[in-house]
Length: 47
Image 1: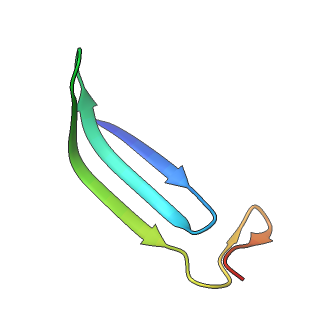
Image 2: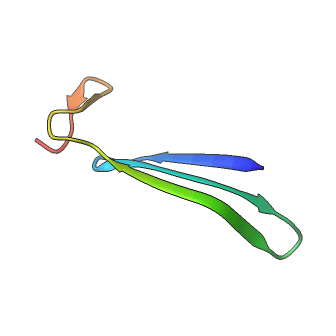
């Protein structure tokens, strides 16, 4: 099972699944929105 995490200015997306020859099987997807004032790398997001 592989996990990929994507961090954007509006939130965090996380996906889990498996990859075979010609197929991608997604077992879980979660999305978490950042609240106003969240700080990442010294920058305030969604101000």
